[in-house]
Length: 85
Image (cartoon, rainbow, N blue to C red; front, top):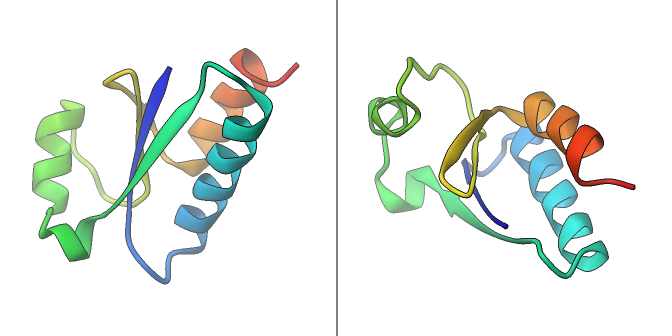
């Protein structure tokens, strides 16, 4: 299972999402992630909206195996339901 977190520096929710992904990476053999800084990569919210298939107002935006999960709280809920024993 591969997760991509699109975030930006200085965003506390991005930090939380990244910390959760790091925890999952250490706890599970089937989990890995990549963090993409949208400012450094020149990615806009419009670009993320196209990828997500719906309007995007905030970061982080998180995709698991290319499926849009949502933001940090959505990722935490998904992890609690599907990934954390």
